[in-house]
Length: 471
Ligand code: ARG
Ligand code: ZN
Image 1: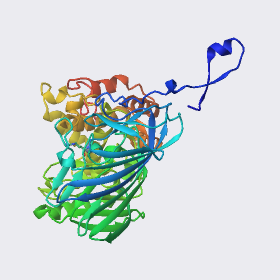
Image 2: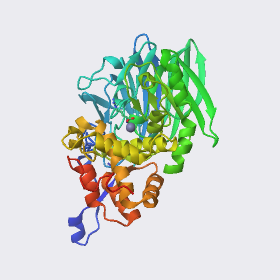
Image 3: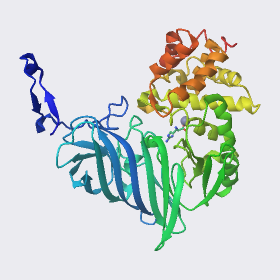
Image 4: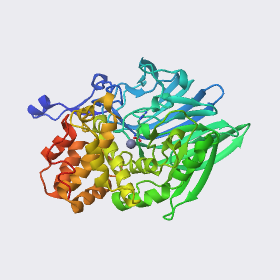
C-alpha cells in the first residue's frame, strides 16, 4: 500500500509523477512453487528464512499441539498467500495481527492478512494448531507414522504437512528451531544440535537447532523411547545417535553400522570435500517400513535395513546425501538423479575403499545384469516421472552413469567434479543442466550427447558403455 509506482505513460509526457500503488496492485501468492512433478508443493510470493516450532505430542492419543512461527520475506506485493499444511488450525497471525485463513485443498492453508504485505519486507506468521496427524489423509495417504511408543515424520518427497505449516519444496530452504515436549521417559529426536532438555510436570522438552539451510522434507521428528549415544568426531563434530529401545534382534547390527557414521564422513570428505553441516548422527525408530532417508545431519533408518546384519553401505548412502541432496538441493523433483545417482555411487566408492569390489566391477555387474529388453532400461534417470522417482533404476543406472562419466573424462576431471560441485554449490539448489554445464567446464569436453544417452533415453546405452569404454 505504501509502495510508490512510476507509471511509464506519465514518464513519456516528461512528468515524473509518483503514484501510490492501490490495494489492487497487491495480488495473491501462487498456490504452487511450480514443481514439474508436484504442482501442490510449495507456494509463491514469499521466501522463508526460519521456522520456530514449539510442539507437544502425546503418543497415547496421537495428539500433536503446536505453534509455528515462520520468518519470511515477501517477493511481491502480497494480498494473500498459502502455506502447505494438512492439520487443523485454530489461529493465524501475520505481523502480530489476526489473519483470516481457510483450507483450500487437502494441504493448502490460504492466509489473508488484515492488510496487504509490500514486496521485499519481512513478515512473521504465527500458526496455532492441534490435530491427530495419523488420521489426516492427503491423497489417501499419511506421512505421519505411529510406532508402539511414539511417532515418526520422515518421508520423501513430503512429510512436513503432517506436523508443521511450510513452503514445502526444496527450493525454499530455511533454518530451524524445533522444541518438542513429550511425556517424561520419552525422547524427541530431530535435526542438528540438542540445545537443551528440561523436565517439569511430567513432560520433558527437547530443543533442537538446525543452523544451516534445510529443506522441509529433510526436517524430521521422532518421538519414542530411545537409547541416545553422544560423542564427538576427530574433527570436533558433535554426534548424537538414537536407537529405539524396541529394535529386537536388529539392534546390534543397527548400532554396528550407525556408530561408524564418523568414519564414513571422514571417507566421504576425501571425495566430496568438507562436510557441510555442524552436527552428525542417525536414528532408528521402531517402524515397520524398510527405507532410509537422508534427514539433515541425522538420517532416519528403519530397523529392517539391519535385518541381515550390519549395513554400513546404507549409512554411507544417507551421509553422501548430506552433500548431494541436503547441501546442494534439487531445484525440481524431476532432478532426483542429482540425489540418488551420487549417493548410490558413493556406496560403490566405499565398497572399493573397503576392498569389496571396485566401482568399475559394480558398474559392470549392473550393466550385465539387465539385458537390453529389460524394463530396467525404460526408466530415464534424468526424468523418471513422479511414479518412478524412487525406482531402483534411478539409483543403479544413476550410479552407472557416473562410472560411465568417469571413463569418458578420466579420473582427474571426474574427481574434481565430485568435489568441486558440492563445494561451489553448498547450501544452494541446482538442476541437471547446470550439472552438465559444470562437468563440461571442468572436463573441457562436450558432454551433451553423453548425458542424453545415459540419463534421458529409455533404452540400454550401447557402444560406449561403462564397460566397453572402461579405462
Ligand atoms: N532418499 C531416500 C534414499 O534413497 C529414499 C526415500 C524413498 N521413500 C520411500 N518411501 N521409499 O535414501
Ligand atoms: Zn538416496
